[in-house]
Each structure stands twice: as C-alpha cells, then as structure tokens.
Length: 463
Image (cartoon, rainbow, N blue to C red):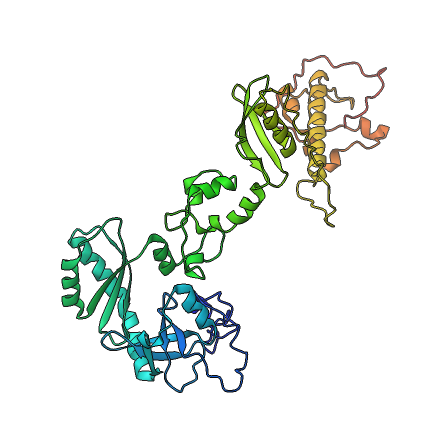
C-alpha cells in the first residue's frame, strides 16, 4: 500500500504520513527499509560504501547499483541508472554500511565491477517520461491478458513493468506447468513496440506485488517486509495444536500462511520437555491414546477408544506409566490431574447500565385505571337492568321509558344540570309540564289508573 492511499492535505502532502511521503517507519511503502545507520558520521579518511540499493515500482523490485559519481545520495531520492538498452528511473532505498549486509543476505558477488552504474540524479524530463510509462502499464496489462487468452495459454499475468525510457517491458506471470510463450513474445513485441522479458513468479510473490489486507487486519507480510519465502506445511499447525482447516490456514495467495512459521521455534522448545513415543499407554482398562499436548499447563490429554472422555495427565505421571509399560506392568489407573475452575471475578466498571432495567410504571397505572373504569361501567349497567321503571312522584303522570333506551344510555353523558341536588317539597309538587319528551315515547294512557301516592314517602331522585 503506497503513500498515494493516504489522505492528502491542503498543500498536497499526505496528511496521514508525518514524513511527508517518505515513510521512515516502513508502514507505507512496500518492502521499505529503515536505515538506522544513516545518522552515524564517517570517520576520517573513509569513503561511503560505493554500492546502493534502488527500488522500482513502489518497492516491487529492488536491485543494487554501483555509485561512481561524486553525488551524495540520500534515501528516497530519484536517480537515473543504467537499463537494458537505455536508462531507468528509481528511488534510493538503502545506502551505507547496511548495503553490505544486504549483499551478503542475497548472495550477491562482492565484485562491484559487474554491477550496473548510477548515471545521475533524475531530471524533470526523465521523471515525466517515467510517469508516462507508468500510466501506460495498466492498459498494457489488460491487452496482454486478452492476447494470452486468445492463444489458449494456461498462465496468469500478475504485473507489467515498463522501463522509464519505454524500450523494455517485463511481464510477471504465474503458471502451474511449463508454458510455451514463444508465439506470445512475438505478438507482444509487434503490438507494444518494446523488448519483451517474461519472468515467472510464485503465488506468494504475486500476492506481494498485488498487496492487500490479511485476516489479522494488517498489510500482508509479503508486501511489506518479507522477502524470503520458506516452505510451510501442516506439520507446523499440528505442533501448535491448530485445527487442520484449509480455509483458515490459507492466505490470500491460496498457500499456507507464512505466519505459521513465526512461533514454530517457540513451540518446538516448549515441546522438548514432553516425553517422546508417548502416543499410547497401557492400563488395566485398556490402551489410552494421546489426544493433545498443552504446553501452557504441561499436561497431556489421553482417552480410551470406547469412551470420549479425556483425562489430563502430568508429564511426570506419563513418564512413570511409560517406565512401567517397558517393564511389562500395566497400571491400574491413570490418576488424572484435577483441574480447578476459576470463579469469575466481578469487576466494578464504575457505571450502571440501565438498558433492560427500566420499569414502565406509568403504563401499568394507566392499564389499572382503564380496568377499574370498565368494571365500574359494567356494574352500573347491571344495576340499571335490575332497577324497575321510575314512577313520577310529582302528582302528574310520568310515563315509563323503554327499557332498551335506559340500558343503552351511557352514564357518563349526563348533563351537569341533571346531577343530584337537594330538592324541597315545592319543587317535588311542581308539575313537570315543560319537560321535553322524545318523539318516539308512547303517549300516556288516560284510562290508566293513577297510583295512590298520598301515604308513600317521596323517592329520592336517581342520580
């Protein structure tokens, strides 16, 4: 992942990178190196090391060049070097004494005369020409893939790198078998007008050139700092007690993850304490087989073939059983270790989480009020049904209203003037001729006998 992915500020410089594009920590450019000896001054009479390391295509490719010029080159500086039939432009990646270690690491000959030379610092015209060729690489990659598909070649083109002067193009490809690309080279040379070089790489090198984010959330090791790829097999996963799951153990390249080898040496040192040839132990109950080794607790787990229960044994106990088995003695019991379960300690986090602890009392009160109101209205309707028709006590005839109207009339719709109030005897004897009657009430029957209300006490009005 290059610095181009960082957010740019108002001045055009990367805002996320404090080195303003020249990352000194190795966290931005691929395969970057921090020169920790660059600040050390040279002693008197000494000259800087004449070989420098130059990176091309954002660290995708690196090479060593001989610096016979009198220029003092610094890390990140653009320079022009010798190329194939022309020149190429790259960035200074490493200078000084650390280049000696890199030469020894990669097995490069100490004869500096065989290395290509550094010409001069890159000019503006050369940088523009280099940028123009870099913009052309994507178009060439798409076209080259289509041409290889038309020739029915079982190969996959991963990257195309064009020299700064546009005279040479290197095609990096991956293939499972040998590919005859002689016809393909002729097609590329006639189409792109360049000198063609085909270079086969592995799946891990392809991931390093493409880049990406691993399952750990960080950039791929092969695209940042890992240069030599060691073989990885499932034995490394077994030593670390990892489940043999091809999906989880494989990286983006389709091969086993390189990080399986990082902690393998530590596990091998821890497993050296455990006894060897302890896959099976003999007891009176039967033969117990080894299931796993716990290097953190120094325990070995065994189980019988007719049972799925596992018994944790200490290393000392396993050695005793093996010594007895060599003498032809079968032990009576395994004597497993009793594992103590640690009680969970509650930690006061300093705040209270009220989610799910709120009581809706307001809703409960409203529901209780609604329930009581319904009970009261139902009781009043039953009392009106049991109560008979009211008789007029004011001397006049008061006809009975239909019972259906009295039952259907809600109690809450009474007018305030109809509420119960104390009435005197004058109001009781006052005829109610001005009362309005509904039109659907039947007319009073004149032949109906009038009840004798002389000796009957007046009734209280119905509220």
